[in-house]
Amino acid sequence: MKLDRPVTGGPCWTELGTSDLEAAKRFYADLFGWRPETDARQEAGGYTMAHLGDAAVAGLAPLYQESQPVAWNVSFAVADADAAVAAVEAAGGTVVLAPADVFDQGRFAVAFDPGGAAFQLWQARAFPGAGLFNAPGALGWVELLTRAPDRVTDFYTTVFGWTVNASEHYPQWGVDGADFGGMVTMDDKFPHEVPSHWLPYFTVENVDATADAALLAGGHLLMEPMSVPHGPRIAVVRDVQGAAFGIRVEGEEGEEG
Image 1 (cartoon, rainbow, N blue to C red):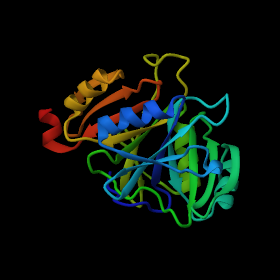
Image 2: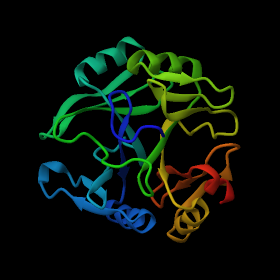
Image 3: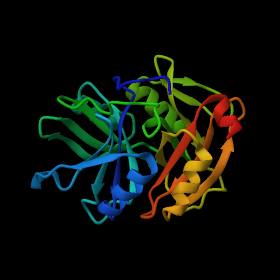
Image 4: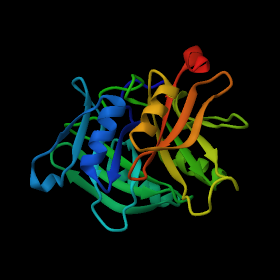
């Protein structure tokens, strides 16, 4: 993506809700070289920060309620979480977790867009979000898979002011024209039970080798490695507990595999 740091309106963080935190820590440490650090405070509930070097790149957490699915989630930076949830509701979204303070780190909320995809809002205080984008093992793209493309385009451009690079086959979201993600319309090829969702893509050095490593670690491929014409090489992986995420590499190196 064309963003290299968290900016208002853009993706600032991604975190995994998992049914087996210790297994997830091992899986992603092996796959991406992450160094996980679990907050020892009881009130943190086992929340774990994954690092590359000194940079925080993703969160890992146990499931906090029975209805919570095993899934990766994407957070978008806002200047005022309370104002943002009001904008979400006014635009037709649903707030499922009202803004709440997370220690001194920031203010957090969870919502669904009108198509049913969950996303998170983050008002930064001490913690701005990911300290690294686009490097191997770090967030490099976010993708919305939806069955209501027109409705959610209106929603996100209204709530966040996103720009839309309206490609016929793959619209791309941006902040002031700096693209950070895209949108896929879910058709009959997607099982009916798969809900609309946001999918984070992590940058890797080699998509094929990383996909093979994920398989060896017990994961599954939801989409085999493929090269996008004039674009990146990508694949979609499901981890051992069932959470889906993408992997990608840009440019000619990706086309060569």
